[in-house]
Length: 171
Image 1 (tube, rainbow, N blue to C red):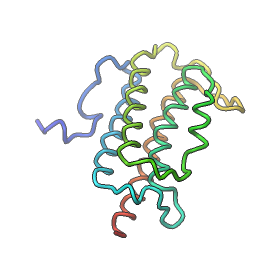
Image 2: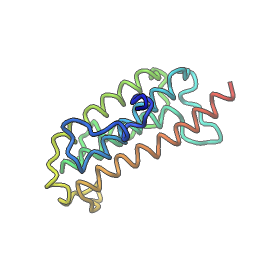
Image 3: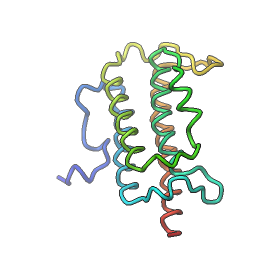
Image 4: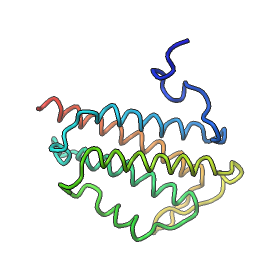
């Protein structure tokens, strides 16, 4: 049997206490978390806010990975965003030289842990319940929001990967 730590998360088996229908979402979030750690291991704080070819900065993607999980899981629970969440959304991508790679990773790790805790406590019977998204109250469902959280996280991880590689090769 291959070394399980070298396998993608979804190939390592079921996650304890995560309902069966939510396993793929949890697997995707944990895979993203592992890849962020690997990708950012030696990335310098001095390049966090660089925007090669005008694309979003590494710091934006790290902030957004954390923020989007927070917001989508809030909506999935049938709640409105708080003033603090709206403030964090407004701050995404605005240069803040006090932020570090490690602080951004720590925030993402905490959000992944919180998201997994919510998944573990999500009743599969609620997955098709209607939910509203944003001020416009756009229609979705619990499973739609949770699935989009995984998809959106993966999308931004891919963008982060390219930006990190471009910036790292320019050093």
